[in-house]
Amino acid sequence: MLRLLKISLLSICLVTASINGIAEETLIQGNAFSYKGKTIEVRQYLDFFTFKSSVLEKMEIQSDGSFKFKFNVEKTGLFLIKIGRINAHLFIEPGNQYTMVFDEPEGEESYNLAKDIFVLPDIFESEGKLNKHITNIEKTLNQFLIDNSKYYGRGVSQQIIPKADSVVILLNELYADNRNEYLKTHLHFRMAAFELQTNHGKKKVYDRYFKNHEPAYDHLSFSTAFGFFFEEYLTFLNPASEYRFQSTADSAIANSDYNLLYTCMEVDPFLEKRTFRELLIASELYEIGTEQKTNLKNVLALLDSLIMNAQDDACRLIAANAEQLLTKFSPGALAADFEFADALGNTYRMSEYKGRFVYIQFFDKFTPETLKEMSLMKILKEGYGTDIAMFSISTSEKPAKLKAFTNKYDFNWIFGTAQSPEQVLVNYDLRALPAYFYLDKDLKFIKVPSPPPGSRIEKLFAKTWNEEHPNKPLLFKLQPPEVTEEPSLPHDN
Image (cartoon, rainbow, N blue to C red; front, side, top):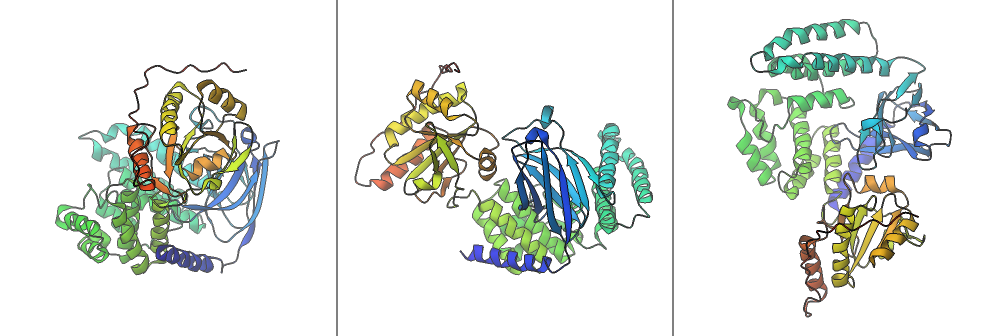
């Protein structure tokens, strides 16, 4: 509760500070015919280290593929245009007008419910050419890296440096007279990342791009350059030996000692800035927590300390966002509610089942592999169904298809189709299906990711049974058989 209060107060303070500027009405319109009927969102990044974002506006794409947004923007920045798992970036300047055209998806850009895909729509700006300039910079640098990949082999790596320097000079001269401050800052830190990618020494890059410049938290190019420079600084890619503080940092993380973690970095000349030390702690703790490299409780305790002790408001916000994202699926976090239609077409909400333990299987379509796991769920249902409500929720199958399959295989638990599949995929971070979640009576996560049907999940079910019936022997001990025969798929009518 204290953690949520701290985060809420911090968010209110930062949001209040941000709305004191003068906002201008901005227009975003366009066409996404391939996604007609789907929801399109305009989202604002809260920071470029955790990439947490909030919805500014959303609407349903019309039958002719058109969409149109009008909303106030205070300052230039990078925004996210989102259609389910389809994402596009747009640099927006206050008061400007933008037209975006999302082409028919092909190949890797095809619409995939379980995978984040970034596309490059055509963008037309009524004033200025910010998106065009940044796109051209990216194309130039990416093409250089492709064309000069041969220089990354042993013995020739240094030969790429003078070639890269000529590109840096070219781009700096090209935009020397451009008065757009956002573009200048973007180019500055984009060049820092590029020099790091092309084997330039860290000291030269630090002196040129970081030492005499303040952090540009509003720029993706800054977070990218910072990430390249301090990549995995607290894990296995350590600072130079004379400044090594790895063992001390490990001890500080293991003991949730924020003061020790902060002070041990002072020996590193690249971390002479207080803001850089705070930012490194926030970003690295988020990465360590995401990759589960250490105990999550230790990471959260350190993030708590950073929120309370950091002098930089932006670092505190990054730490708060990291904390929220890391605890989204942690044991005890509340599972997102959603609506589904059962095999008869009746609609329900998952929240209606509060008061029972819940085991959810999310799947896309009926496949032999999915049916194998459902055959094990059937055994689980026979053993634990009186205490644990079981669900198989599809992201695409129609109720009639659910009914046909449940009848054929005598599946006797609840089957349903998510009413808002895109939202379910996002809320539960479903990137591979089928996926499983085990919830307690308050619909809070017990274990994420939860094991699929089998002996591992049975251990959790048995624990639940013993807690519910302490004086009763286990009703059913499951030793699920190996299913070797692939179930046949019923013919579609």
